[in-house]
Length: 85
Image (tube, rainbow, N blue to C red; front, side):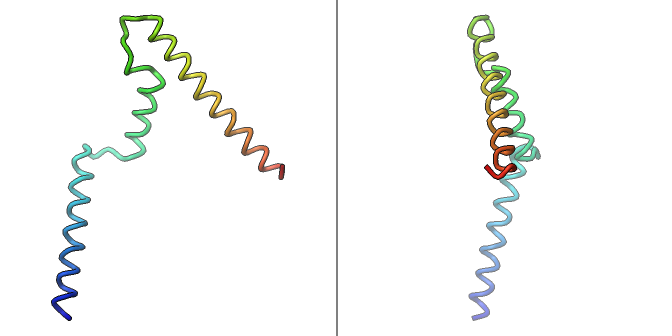
């Protein structure tokens, strides 16, 4: 029985160490920071060809309008639910 508990503790320790090493490989950046960086790069069209000005600006404008529309819908929903709609 003691051997079983010891092996369970060792397995848990290995899982914890593996998780810590995976998080350390991410460069020490938090999940929120990585998500914010990805969102910024998405809205600013960092993934499109900057030499094609129409695609670049069209993508930036479209993604910005989409983000604003999403924020507007979320605000509307919160206000609607707050009034007891």
